[in-house]
Amino acid sequence: MRKKLMIGLMAAMMILIVSVPNALAYFSTYARIKGTAQLHLGESVTFEEGPSEDGNKLVTLTADEDSGDVYVRVKAFAVDAVLDNLTYKDTNEWTESDDESCKVFTYNGYLSAGESASIELIVDADKTGLDNFSLIVVYEYCPVIGDTPDWTGENIHLVEDPNGGE
Image 1 (tube, rainbow, N blue to C red):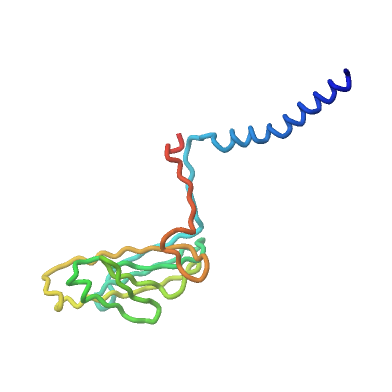
Image 2 (image 1 turned 120 degrees about the horizontal axis):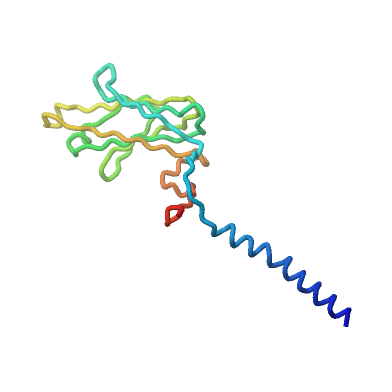
């Protein structure tokens, strides 16, 4: 009788030992917290835009001092008459391509911490046939993961709480 009781207690202890970590995992996985925290992915780029010496648009991208390596590109948006007459000062550092609604200029390497890359965008205003126009420039950067840039963001995994962390 005493032997059966000991075996039963040992079996109960084994079940508790095996199941308690799973129960704790449940509570740690699904517990919600309140508050905020700044997310730093390790990359940061500064964007500067202004006129060049020739009066064209000069865009400079600089990887911050504490940044990881990044690929960069510049997108130019405007009406078709402007985009059709948009060129850049070719320094063999940039590659031009067309997107559906813009022109894309991709830097042919990557920027490391503290490094800069500049591109001068030139619009032949006489050929546009317009009295005035706007040329909107935005930039993008992505971390260096492999030999080619991942502009889709598929290699970056962020988990977002659909309830806002509440």
